[in-house]
Image (cartoon, one colour):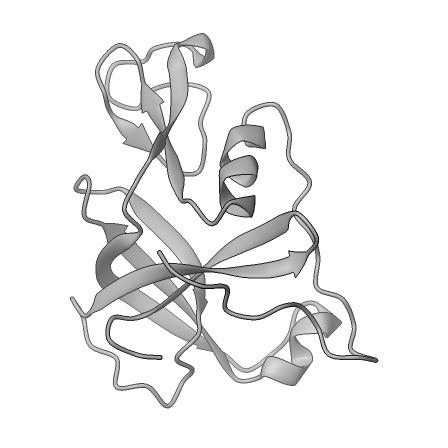
Amino acid sequence: MSEPASSGPAAGALARPVPVPDERSAGFWAAAARHQLTASCCDHCGWLAYPPTIVCHRCSTVPAAFHDQPVSGRGRLVTWTVLHTAFLPAFAPDLPYVVADVELVEQPGLRLVAYLLDGPEADLALGAPIEVVFEDVEAGVAVPRVRLVGRP
């Protein structure tokens, strides 16, 4: 994972929503603020889950048996969609933009859905290598974004 994607909205722009951590996601968002991607890891069987979950989908372990496990932020593009309508006004200046579904290398089925920084003009292909970068949305808050590997 690398440098921040940006440092927040331009002057006069609408602010994007900021994550509000809950008990399950607090560790994830604390790690994201440090530009580190994590997944929930089942202490019983080692299965990784994202987003944080309350029950292991592999062994049905209860929530107390999970910890935040750093992951690489590397993966492959599974699918994507180009949005032409902003469901929140703060995203209207970005239209059109791409939301990518990425399978992370750590485990089959470990998926992350995120804003693709390369945009709709990018040469997208199934299986394209992807990496996570972080966008600082305000002091102490960062969100994961993705980009094609080898792009600035």
